[in-house]
Length: 562
Image (cartoon, rainbow, N blue to C red):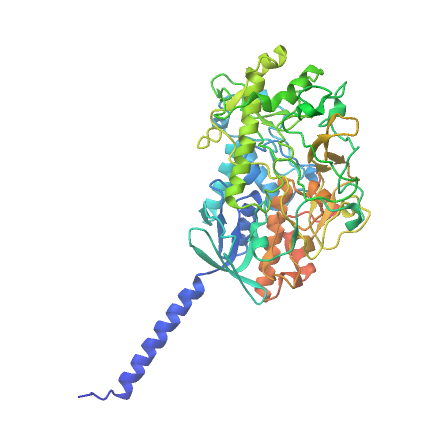
């Protein structure tokens, strides 16, 4: 027998069902995060902080275990350029670093007074607070981690984007991303804060790898640069040419390791090569805080035969880029014709699979760790250089979960978006005005070497190292942070920005990435609040908010002494 239900019972049941559906719909909506950030770089941190400060839900999906990218990965001697144009959260980071070094506990291996004017206590240019631009890797990471914790920002680490089909796009919008672990993250706005531009590439956004020909954007310093010698990272810096063959003068004996037998190309034309990578080494000369450079398992001294010839030619600048940071440590960078830059061994990195990238990174580590061991131990190294270098080792209290080796390789350049606006050397050199500034850069237009080859005279030579001074700080266009509107309308890209190779050579500095992380997020949230594409954000509104938050957009806004 079927019992007939009363109207009241039916009504109550209906209301219950409606409430259940509404509750679950609300829960489902709640699973959609306002701002989803992919990446663990310095820009990812400032992007997340800005989103939280603007009252939005945010999550950081980081393929890295450690936050901060290069800033926390060994680049402690900041490439600041003109500090007057570093504002907003980027400047706040350096203020927080300064605060760390006011604590006596921060000085374990050196007296604070001994560090003196090498960075400690640099007065901020507005006279109200202080900043510190030179720091140890672990201190930078502590600052980032504490900043994230203060604001309660959720960070998932060691989560890698599924680059095959892990980005869902509907009607020109990214709706969700999925990682290799199977986790899915729905969002309203997305930020690609990786050095490699993995999210934007997987989403189908246009990008470029390598050098454009000078003719593409009407530039002078892009493209192949044979015959250009701007720094001392080339063989013209030596008093005599270097023969590239195992048996000098005999091409049939074969080339020495790490010299290409290919023609370098025609000056001014483009190629698909990227500037060399390396690790920024944190070394120590304190007897109680150094570890001797270990002999790599696959050590091969013949890989450094070219360096022997360079030493024999009188090269005595091995210590030329041992930039000192607190506690008797260094941020050691490439210097000279044969150094930590692993020239020509990274061309396929930008588009490579994760597995191939790991191989490239390991090859770079093997090369660089072998180089350090070689100089410290091989009898062919000049005695004076070797003896002095034996006073150095890896800093025992840095990168303690990675064999005291930096956890971040210096990806100086990978993919670069081709977005709404492309920054070129013409904007940086102020030959053209920059529309809709969202921040400023000021570092020299800079590229490291890209090729090592045999020149027309039969000698070894490097190519690609460029250093072009600027007339002054330059503005960075908002359009360089967003894709073309017909591609994706809810993505901003503050690291793999839309720029030519040579313009990126200046933009790619860590303080600038933090600036752009903040500005990109601000624009994304304004677009979110108005329900419009990121390409349609009203610049005057964006400008007003950026200035309110301390960003420096023009020279008129620069932070000046009082």
